[in-house]
Length: 140
Image (cartoon, rainbow, N blue to C red):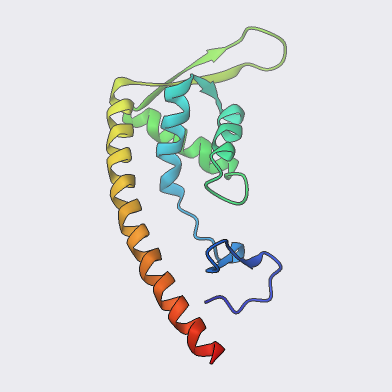
């Protein structure tokens, strides 16, 4: 249970404390979010940042540097490919597109995330039961 005095700490609908200040960042999870965004449409860096922010995985926008490092790493692995778009006004943009190998990796991520979700659901169920038991004791 969070004993922080941060304003971002609150109770969720299930009355389990939700603490934004203790959110654990998972940079590796940028990979599946980027791949999923690119599966929908090819895109460039800042547009990807907006799309990933829209998934609401973190309370704050993803780190710009982490996005670009992840894109470079995934391109090196062959999961995405890029090209320069020099059309239009403004500076050239590097446009990223998922490859067939990237689609296979995305599918693997979906399986992994589904399994983790099941484990996390079990964790939350167990924690909820503990928290309810603790709350009942405190009300006595």
